[in-house]
Amino acid sequence: MVTKKTIDNNLTATLKYALVSDKKMSLIAQMVKWKSVEEALVFLHLLPKKAAKFLHKVIKSAYSNATTNGTYDGKKLFVEKIEIGRGPKIQRIRFVSRSRISHFVKYRAFVKVFLHVK
Image (spheres, rainbow, N blue to C red):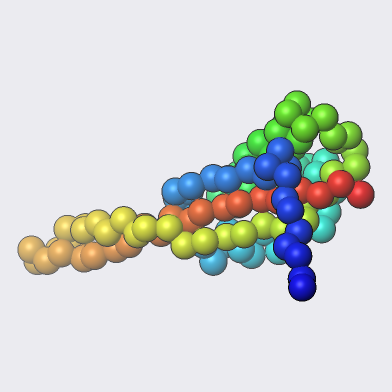
């Protein structure tokens, strides 16, 4: 019988309803995966993308959860897994010329970060 790996809640953080597309968020998440937390935070701080700011916020939250609540050493932590989910869409309209209406959609994303100790 295969047992599931238990995940410590002190090593996770979630962000819901981030106003950025899940596709754009997953591209940034692939760059950060399997890096140390300090290296990932510096990388995301310097990256000029909107999704990077959201991901920086979540990884920083998971890092502080691990160091304060879980008493883990911050230098041994690395980003093990990042789950990106699709959130609800916001549908809006824009008025254009000749009394017409143009529709556009704002996408949202759910992010969950899992850290691991080396």
